[in-house]
Length: 420
Image 1 (tube, rainbow, N blue to C red):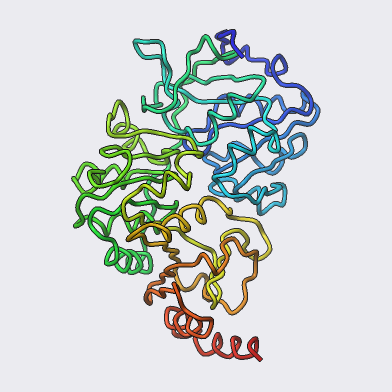
Image 2 (image 1 turned 90 degrees about the vertical axis):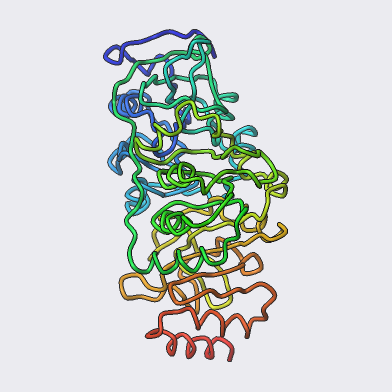
């Protein structure tokens, strides 16, 4: 790696860098380098077959029709990549998020070419990765070729940088960065958030998944004090809580005074807040999801979501109606760490129903993403089932109590049939 050639987008011929059979990776969600992805898609027939390793999609840049020349693999079918999962063209890699850097380094997930979106150089000549560190830096270290997209909309964030002289080529882009605004909060999410907020102690360190529920929880924490943040992602509502003095990281135990994340998934509001913010750092997945690091946090409160949970606490976060629409992700990394942490709270939250169907079920319709031995507190709008230390019979009663009332009798009958 390292010629640092600037190439005009109109003159970019990716066949100079990509070989037949290569595997390519780029940033997730807001970190997608849109101009490079669009060029790759437009030129895809020139490389014979290539493959991409995908995370959370941001801008619908990759469509099911592009499977005519691209093999699509990934750890998640989140965001715009749900369409790939629904079309059956995404080949999932079920793995814990914490494992991805090591899988890339060992070439069990081979990466040959990296597309990365960066900020313009600062006075020292360094470009910030700004929106994502996660597994990108590991991929850059082990790839044959790195192509950068320089975008003035990318904030300068401490934690991951590069020099343009050290990449193989770079392009200038003025495309707007993908916005991931805070989600819309409905009555069920609001009720769940209030229940969770009632259990979060001042001084706790937060980890949150993505989607409407984590946003609702953050909104419900406005009255708390000295919260910390160590999470795989952050967005607009984290920025709001920092500005409100709720998240200070003062009692965090590690990285005191600094919010740590692997990926920024917000709107322009988050990017403005993040730019040159000395109280924010992006870090690799091998740090944000590292068990030894998480063990040093204060009162780690892990708040994740699920597709469905059975009456014994088994959690499916991957498959809906036979279609891969989620991920194993980082939930179990954080749930185990929170369970082992003094004062920690391992939480999984979900509305009790979706489209009239119960999401508390007698038997999962998909895989066990998190085993019942790692289930902690399951939260719906109807209450909290703290499964820690409970027997199977006790769990059944606790889970029925947080199911939607109209589904409880059927669930109880189904549970009795299984026990017999």
